[in-house]
Amino acid sequence: MPLKKSKMAPIVPLPSRTAKKHESKWITQTEVAKRLGVSNSWVSTHTSQPIDPIPHRRLLGKLQYDFEKVEEWVNKNSEYTGMEA
Image: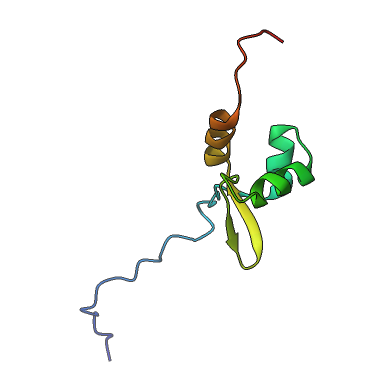
């Protein structure tokens, strides 16, 4: 008995989820401190200050920072004296 040809469309595999590495823009407090050249306690102090804290979010109890927003915050809060270092 000959096999019948299927009328269904061929099955096409889905692209692998590991094909694209998802890069998160969220970094840890330690990474912020390293990038800014300051201590973890400095980042912590400026994150928890009541007025104009470092932009952050808390996800599952862990602080996370978007470094682009941190850089904007640093630029906004830096004082320029007009003197060369």
